Length: 231
Image (cartoon, rainbow, N blue to C red; front, side, top):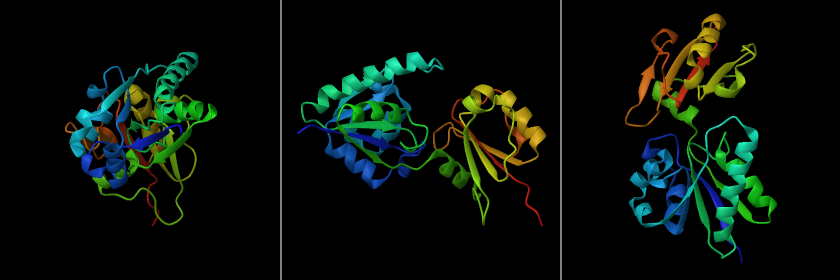
């Protein structure tokens, strides 16, 4: 019997938003994988260990995942990570891979999962609270109502075209590195804009208008841009 690779979402930052299933999965398994040079220093680990203190006693596997847009470099790092994890799976050990938010939404886990599944191993996803749902809750606003569509975009990759022309509301994730560009687009777009930076973390910041948003906002900056309500 080979082990199972679990992709476990730890939510956006507040350990109280971790699901009971995520907590149980961490508690019941010995090997915990985290993308980063040092597992204990990663955001995902620091969130999870607050909800599951015994995580500090587990065997931690640090997976080096350089932040790059070089697709070939990314592919090599994902293959190395899969190889690391498969050494445990072949021995019958389950591995819990911690990921921010939900493992089905723009998660590094999905790339590793595809490789591991392709090699014949079993994988499972454990849902977490997505960052855009947590940010909407923090702002005390609905994401969508009635028949409004919702568009979720990784701003760091998808705003080169300079177009936000579909009807409905937008979530712009990972906006920090291109904040000047994002703010220029939103100013021309006319939607009602708010943002949460580092949602659920100690250094959380809330901005309730486009004018309040700083140009040097951090990587974990999530913008909600809503159509002006028609009366």
